[in-house]
Image (cartoon, rainbow over all chains, first blue to last red; front, side, top):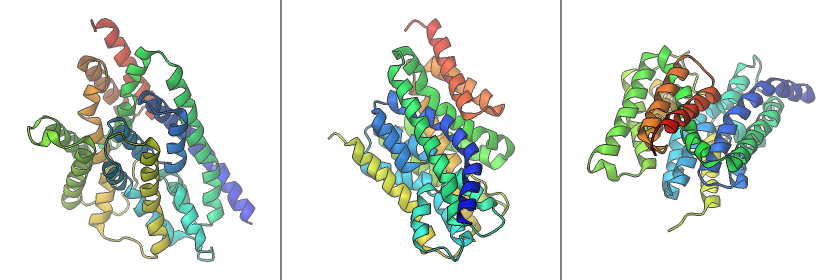
Length: 238
Length: 103
């Protein structure tokens, strides 16, 4: 019975793994061009398993930010996972031993959560582990391949790859902004506010990690206050 | 002072794991507050937007190649291209513009 649930997880996880490979390949390249070793890039992917969090962490490492900055940035950016974990806590098979919760938490990502949540029945831990067993290797191997390519490419290519990470961010935020006016307003005001931080005399002194945190909390806070979402509209970014 | 990259990684991994683990282990109740749910929904968009602009402008050898990349990425993303495609288009824009610029 458990084997069947695990196999179902593996089957559903293959598509996730392929998508992850492409995204983490970009992360691997970005890591290499930011001066990280291949081992460090792979280690980040293996221990974090989160795209936006890893990219922002990388930006702070590259800028030589403080440990507090990197901790707070991860907290703010990855806070949405706590919502998913809350939801999975409800859905989890009540018969499953409690320690499964601590283990399953490792791979609560947008995509894996989406698959978990789509089950009609209560969530068996084996299904979650089945998805994880293919999705995480996809994530880690993509990082490895990207980091290796990033290390052997010529300098002018590496300079061009500097924008890859931002291209990825735009690819994540623009399609939903096109469909949802509030998301569009959120994107534009967040860009405007962080731009102000980069040009105004006193604000200019705030380090990049804190600009991201302050901007995110202010803009998402105002948007939640003025335009709270409808119940069915809770799907996050990939 | 210089920072240890492995310590950065440990901090990142620790914070990210705790965010995922604590609600699963400690909570049996779902969040129903619509404002908290909305805030968490908007967070990724605000965050990624703030990280992208204006940082993208200073990510290449010239602000003109960066502007070209920004424009190309917006158009490609608007047309619903995949993450990797948009990223590669942006890189190609930089390569093309910089090959014409006297750097």
